[in-house]
Image 1 (cartoon, rainbow, N blue to C red):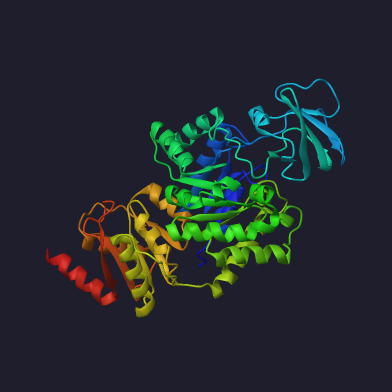
Image 2 (cartoon, rainbow, N blue to C red):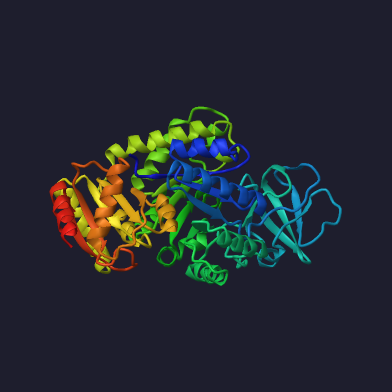
Length: 478
């Protein structure tokens, strides 16, 4: 079974119940809902479909709500505006004056920060310009690389710290919706530092939730605060599209490795995203470079690889999922297992290290970790064990959230027993009955004296068939 997870974006090509079911069967672990598009009613329908189908298939599937954030976009343009090298384009804060080469942008407050010589890009970097002058509140730019500009195209100001409010009014409404619908993760766009995460966490709490936050690393400013962001967030995403525009595409591979390494050090999930299989938007086959790109992300240590347009609007979404799964599986045959964590911060991390080493040295078939919040099994996943890693929980949210974490096979069971031996016995019986574990298998078991409480993990046991029978005999005698 592959250990690196798959995130798929739903869109017009894949929003039907039939396609959602096909994706889950093909191995999709997390569905991304892009809140830059659609309305609450359409997203609510998708959430209902995902939950119902995953429940019927008895498979753990997480939902990632991707908040739009303060994306700067071109205003309304009548048709297509052709821009050629050397053209002068005027950007107004509110309305144009009726000329041919005039536009407005969302977040016009950034115009006050643009000085002559500043770079400004349109359409995700396809059209490039440089500020030449200010005329009142407007800015005049010269086109350096031309193209065809249309309404709502993205605008980037590379390397500038524009100080735009991270959370728009639309975002607040979307976050409130996500909390009410019990989404499993919320992805935050354009995070700059840990303060941004703290602010959104308070906002989520104000809506009555505690949804884990995934910080999208897509700004140069975020790289200056990478350690504090990975310490504050519950996960990160390598958002390579905007990173490539901000930094230049030649730096993206290096930055990707840096972000993944930081997430691995802090033991939080990391998703690698953007253009993993772009050619499969229109082709049933990937390029060799795309397959190599996926393999390198896996070897870097990413928890998950994400498909965006490939599954949202592409012509070959199923084929893209299959290619992704096959590439991950092939790459993991040369995976650098059992990684050393340089510093063990607490007893939970020490237990995770001991369990991983014991499983490796004893030849155990896997590790079984009982967890309520998911943190204990995440700490084990940080070591990238070669054996199976089973996360046993009675918390439905944790069961779904663990679908994103590298290597974890979530197993849900109603555990009402505070006694750890009774909890282990109940799991083994149910797991054997479901064909989830073999009767002859040996597992390293991680559990707390109070198996259904968070923060009580303090036991490491070797559970082979003989030990299980002894436990059963003891429990019968109580």
